[in-house]
Image 1: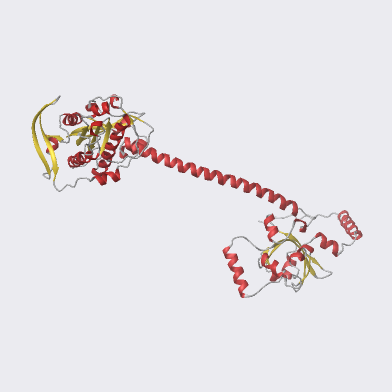
Image 2 (image 1 turned 90 degrees about the vertical axis):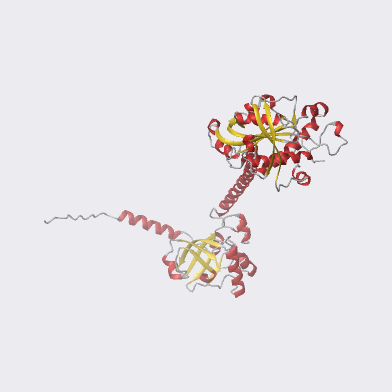
Length: 495
């Protein structure tokens, strides 16, 4: 199938355009010629070089810092930054409409010392190379402008000005503001960039100061969070605390433990001590005693449930389930019985008796309990069950400096423990029970006074006790047994 493609020819009279161009040429012909002195005054950084690339003339400002530059080859003294072509005369002519940027081969500070003479010795080359590798800052002088060919002289004039980012670079290059050209905005741009740079530096310093304050605040926050976690772990077991921090309802943390062993202790003479001693002496005595017990809980892997007035309650088998919970509690009880001899009785009648010490009762029982967090504002990890009440009864029906245990606990102890049967005891609320005394353990080494003295250097967070009541331990923590803390601090030592 054949198709016909029409062709059109447009003809028009171009005389008006030719007349305008002729008028411009005639107007330029009437302009006076610009002398070299004016040209070099307008362009103080001008560089004139011939076809052989030898520099013939340079501008006033450039001659002040590089007076020996004329006579050197343009492409040996400078590197061409842009455009990306080989630095040759004919290639420059072919790109005369481009913006050219060159940079000195050697650092400008070295050229200032030699007045523009390029030092090509190996030593200086290694020094310059080391400086370029070791310092990221560009130390070369950059010139940017237009390459203009002058056919009458067969030379290229590089009408350029220095490319300076700030006033520091200007001073580093050995130049001053009045050395810059007046026909462009080089001076204004440099001063404006300097002002902007100062503002940016001030803003950066302010941000750095804020960053330091933020880091300091974050460190304080981390420290407070650590202290908060430590305080929480003292009230709640760490494993349970981690669950609560994830958002778990405290009620859901309750667990049933089929078999645990519980230890109770009290000071039988505590009422008499409270009646005869100053309040701070009582506080120091209790803090010293409970400080020792806290360390013994770490030693024997026993969890401290609570301290109510003169009473200490510990458990093994909860919140971490272990099989040898009875052994751990008996080791704890033996250590408590021995270490309490390091705590002096504060009553006045024993002031002249260095060996007079606080005497305690210890009671233990094994059985099932329910454990969980009680309270929102002041959460506590509490144990509930008949085993708690029975352990309390073992303590209250025991004797001073004796470890009184039930048959359930005795059956869980290995033969290494020396256990003596006490007989049948009519226990309040429990009826007749066969109970036992724990005397000692084979090959056991009792903690020494020096070990206790090294470890019990505690911060005294004193507690004020108004009156002594005997709480019903079968119901957990009682309001009547709540303690308050004072703001007194001091280091305690044993006597």
